Amino acid sequence: MLPLRDRIKVFINNRWLVFVAAMWIQSCAGIGYLFGSISPVIKASLGYNQKQLARLGVAKDLGDSVGFLAGSLCEVLPLWGVLLIGALQNFVGYGWVWLIVTNGVPTMPLWVMCILIFVGTNGETYLNTAALVSCVQNFPKNRGPVVGILKGFAGLGGAILTQIYAMIKVPDEAAIIFMVAVGPTMVVITLMLLIRPVGGHRQCRPSDDLNFTFIYSVCLLLAAYLMGVMIVEDTVDLNHTVITLFTILLFVLLLLPIVIPILLSFSSEQRPIEESLLPVPQKEESSKSGHDVNEVIFSELEDEKPMEVDLLPASERQKRIAQLQSKLFQAAAKGAVRVKRRKGPHRGEDFTLMQALIKADFWLIFLSLLLGSGSGLTVIDNLGQMSQSLGYENTHVFVSMISIWNFLGRIGGGYFSEIIVRDYAYPRPVAMAVAQGIMAVGHFFFAMGWPGVMYVGTLLIGLGYGAHWAIVPATASELFGLKKFAALYNFLTLANPAGSLLFSGLIASSIYDYEAEKQAQMHYQPHQNSYSLHRMLDVALGVENTLKCKGTICFFFTSLIMSGLCIIAVVLSLILVRRTKIVYTHLYGKSRT
Image 1: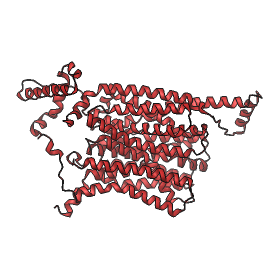
Image 2: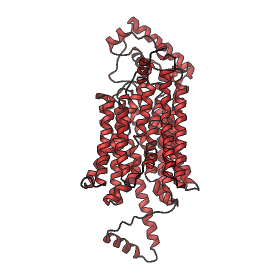
Image 3: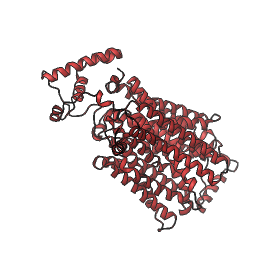
Image 4: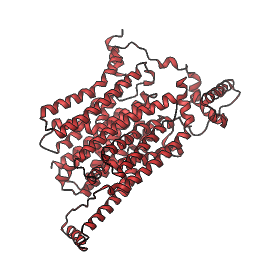
């Protein structure tokens, strides 16, 4: 039995404690999803119109996605320093917005408000990056589940913070902005010293699969609980005591995962299993060469193996590759061959961002993500108008529902993609192709406008969109390494605002306005000049009379275009699958033997 002091040390350095702390930080990192709750307060207090408010929304989207600086700082600063910067950005950005809204400081021009919103939301990229970098390094053999769970909590953060605000709600509506500024900052500062690499690859235990199953169970229970609470609070007039009880139960669910590191540190007597499975490294040789022998032989193997090997059945291909690898090891040890070294890394090794940018695989990931997630974000950004055009009044119900499906998509994407690579040694991007196929069906449902389309459509689009953000980061880390993962990940996230700008800002809005204009002209058709006169009077009087479109025609062509784009994304993902089969066979094929 270890003394209590040593057990506490083991607890502090347990990789599951780092993972749980990262989950808690991520649950506060979804501040961008609360913009729909704080924007009415900003609009009413500062007298903005809808176009001005939309500019703040663009600033929020950019802040949520532009993370180059966060990725760069992860390479030169400890992760707690990166988290501290993100927390301070969140506090300064949204804290200043709160002061402006409450007249604590003089009102600022719109461009200053855009900068403040950008700075505040950009703090989220620091939290996301630090959490992902630490946990992917601590769980190198479980990247899919880890990324999916962390990104899932980020997606669910808006719903969690909304429930907390419902408990502390005060008459001042601007208090939600104060909560956004102060709440995540306090949580991050409390937990930031726990977020770090702790040599997690040496902490593998037989109970890891059971622990992930427990985490998944908590996630599903949390999603179901939040969905039920939102429906009850929306349909029933509850008193403050009941809402407080609901929130306390939410905190209990969020705290449940901490039992894993506690049990492992204070109750479990199992020893780590991974070190016994690894070959003893030749320290002197590796230190002299500066290269891992296995990596060098694998690089040489890619060059020396005959092309027909890839055409053999899986079992025979594995046997032939193992024989060739053994011969190369023996020849290299005797000095009979000189293992050549290429200037650039191979797939599966560590890439810098500049090295990855010249690789076709990297751009296949980026373009596939742009088409898939961009089309999904188009639905999320226009969900209010889509539901209104189809005659639904309670649009916020669908906003909440797609957030829950987004969360479950991230959890499920990480889980099922891990099964694909672990059990079948098949490329992870095939899971992305499946998610994009699901989204193509969802967009088609929206185009048809069948009964119940909003429920089915939000389900399919939410699941598919969320799955991208579990699969893509894990895929990038596998193909391009962990050393520069922060920079690679933050470049790929640019596909999200780029897709939103192209598909929502250009395609969806243009088609919607065209159909709304046409419907308005038909309404005034009996008096040909009435429509023009009506619009001229609105402009002269400064009246904001936004045109509204009704019926399935409003998003018919947009949804068909989005469905087609998702099909193109499926093709790109399958091309990536074909190109990376040998890499995944090398990374995961031996785990099944």
